[in-house]
Amino acid sequence: MSLTAEDIVRLFEEDVRARRRLAELLVSEPDVRLALANAILREVATKEDIRELREEMYRVREELKAYIDARINGLEGRVDSLGQRISNLGQRISGLEGRISGFEGRINGLEGRIDGLERRVDDLAALVRASLIAIVVTLASTVLTPLILKLLGVL
Image (cartoon, rainbow, N blue to C red; front, top):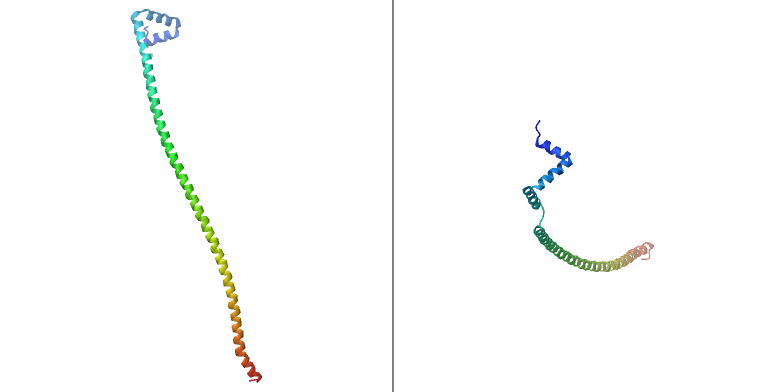
């Protein structure tokens, strides 16, 4: 029966002592040890790698800060502009309220004048009625008096 590579791996997974013994054998060989150390070092970050990473992070942080500052400054400008527009609208509203108050005063004045005109028209209507009655009475007396006197035989 032949052993496959997978069988060998499974056997090492099951036997901790055999796995440890294989590791000791591999590490005791200088060439294998050097190859393992080089492979491990390729995976480990050096001080230079860390320094470069820090510099990159600092640069990205500064770019982000500059971007955020620019956006904030832009937003502050827009907020200031909106504040000015709101202030202008407030002034316009105050002006319109003043004009409305003026119109209300003028309307009240016109209502007073209309009331005065209505009273004068009522007085004039009463005067016209009285004059009409006087005219009718005068006409009646002018026309009826001679007729009545004729009927009575006085004339």
